[in-house]
Length: 227
Image (cartoon, rainbow, N blue to C red; front, top):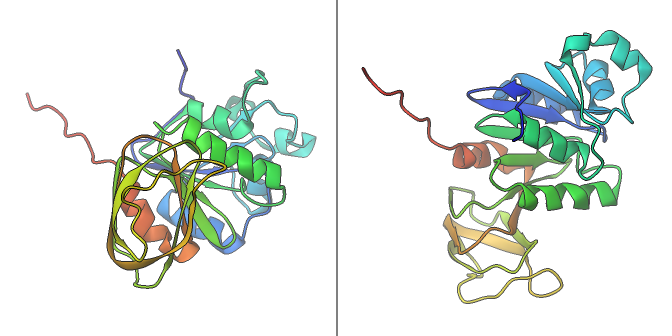
């Protein structure tokens, strides 16, 4: 059973080692002040003047200077090599939503690995923030109120079907699959509602949709039982 290293009842910002727009990092920390670094993301955190609550990874990227600057009790080395540092972090943090930065830039293969991880670990809600776009795994039922005409892209990471409202080109009756039909460059025509039959669809939106997407992805709080 996976042991959670970091527990938060709300949201967490997870920082990777790729180049990050400082304005996007500031906005993410306004939304989710708790900061966790994935391996070399610790160097990026320190460079931004932030001390992460935890650093998780196999520690093949973090610098000696960063390890010296971060207390030992905040460093968690996970040595298995069957997953990326991003996936290691997803497995070892518990939060209602993870905002991930520094996973989509610099290297195309790292970006693809991050998209794969979103689908492979779809039970953990995570939204990735890039320079121009945000990306997240589509839950079974998604409602978004976005500006008319906004770009709305769907990219299948597995064979998947669904139905839609509020898209210029509806997806009803279409079979999506990697290497087959994809749904990029659609447009918003009204309040968006997606219902997916199975996991596997990535949603890609302009970064301007961040706040709306965060609100839509937040699972409801579970009320405490009264005595």
